[in-house]
Length: 407
Image 1 (cartoon, rainbow, N blue to C red):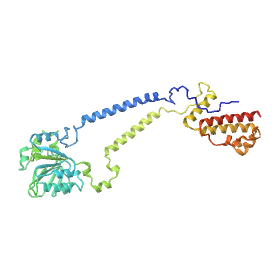
Image 2 (image 1 turned 135 degrees about the vertical axis):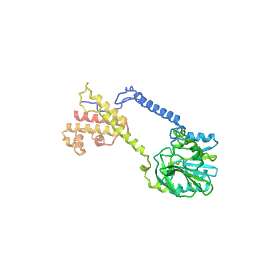
Image 3 (image 1 turned 180 degrees about the horizontal axis):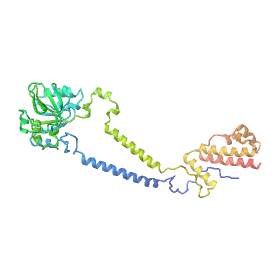
């Protein structure tokens, strides 16, 4: 008779088990995670270092703080030497508040302004009495900001002659005002300069309160990479340096959306297109990594055990798993089910009825000496409340089986 059914817990003084691939210990887990943590730390430090090195150096196209080829830091420095202060704003409200008779308002991207922001800027242009310079506005912004001015196509020539009596243009000479937008207007007292195929690329429109509006069809005269070419620097200083303060307006993404437009746009419409390509690339990389790792997984192979494992070791191992998982109910059910099966074999009860109390209990009661023994509670009772009660149940089941076997 085998008596190694009891899923007794290992003693509290059992020595710690060594780490294995299936049951790694804390030290092994730390060693495995060390490489990943080091790699993540290196990436974080590198990212912070690159971000700190680039902070304050690059800001974008036509930004007076940017030394990049498409930035405008050079012209801002030249204006500073002439005593002109440059102030950067990013909203239409800030631009309208800063505009005045002693300021020049430069709008780098008029077409980005939403329908509710353009009237705010137009009102400030009319009432301020200063100068407003619009960089390459098209049909989107022209009707609201400069009524009476229309787009007449694109200029093919990049360098153009002034061909107008404007002092700033005649002093600068040939400049890179071409390669952008051409305009046409029938407004009185409008000055047209730098024509391309008969249509100007620079317009000066007088204002109602002593100011004026300059429509510039190309941004090239303000860029760092082309400021030193031809008379670009001279024209830029003449257009932007006539007053003591220059308000440099870089429209933000918020100014390109009105309240109604923001409600109509979905979340995916607000995500820049570049992020979609980045997500697609990350997805492809993840799939390739999954395929690469999956190649290492082959079909399951059945192998013979290199050693014979004793039944007692298997029982003890399963008992430890039950204890670790807190599966006292499962351990109790296994003990009772196995005992009922063996008792049915000893008593001649059909195997199909071994788990039936009505068939098994009367047969067991006929073979025990103590009629007061609680057989239903022992064979079909509730789950023990603690480990000690579970051990006691296993002992009672073993004693019952021995009694039936010897009777």
